[in-house]
Image (cartoon, rainbow, N blue to C red; front, side, top):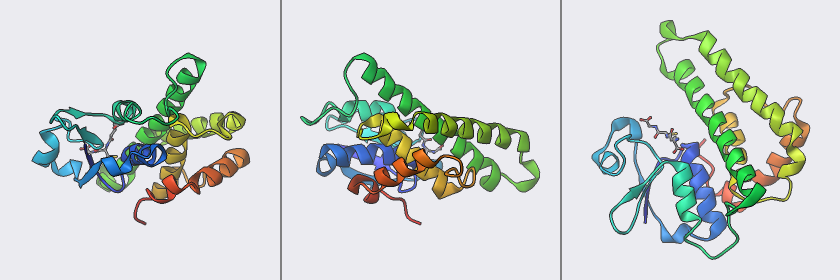
Amino acid sequence: MRLRHSHTSPFVRKVTVLLHETGLVDRVAFDTVDGWSEPEALTGDNPLSMVPTLELDDGSSLYDSPVVCEYLDNCHDGARMIPTSGDARWRVLREQALGDGILDCAVLIFMETVKRPEDKRWDWWVDLKRRAIMRSVDRLEADADGLAGRVDLGTVSIAVALSYLDLRGAVGEWRDGHPQLAAWHAGFAARPSMQSTAPPA
Ligand SMILES: N[C@@H](CCC(=O)N[C@@H](CS)C(=O)NCC(=O)O)C(=O)O
């Protein structure tokens, strides 16, 4: 298998944390690509030109990150990162959706505040996305007890999303007013899988 990836993409990081946690990391070759440059190596596998994209041994490919994670979770014999049924499954999938949604908002804020020419920036849009992130962080603080002691795709997604808020500074210091979530994140971020996938400063 070959993972087309970038070092800073948080969606890629979700996949690579899962690879480490499941012991699959040595079964995957890594190919660094820049989706914005639309390289043929990537667009041939994924017409959207986005990472992560997983090329399988038979030459076919899978994307986006939830699909790649689901596939990889079927490639190992350890504890499932995505429960196969019941309430636990829906909780993990909802947490993945919330983590990915925070990331979508943070990427949009980055595009608007850093990439877009200054005279074309839209404050209303940035504020809307910031409020969505902060409501999500409030909700996670209220539910922080439910994150404790778990290592699955739900907790990986939340931890990766919070770490990305630190990387891009999308909402300032999200820890203020969220002590339980901050303590949980500090513990999870110390895991070897998180440490070895940290983006370059
Ligand atoms: N929903 C996608 C989002 C992936 C995504 O946004 N990837 C970004 C990097 S963080 C990308 O490839 N951007 C290139 C582009 O938009 O052209 C997933 O979960 O994989």
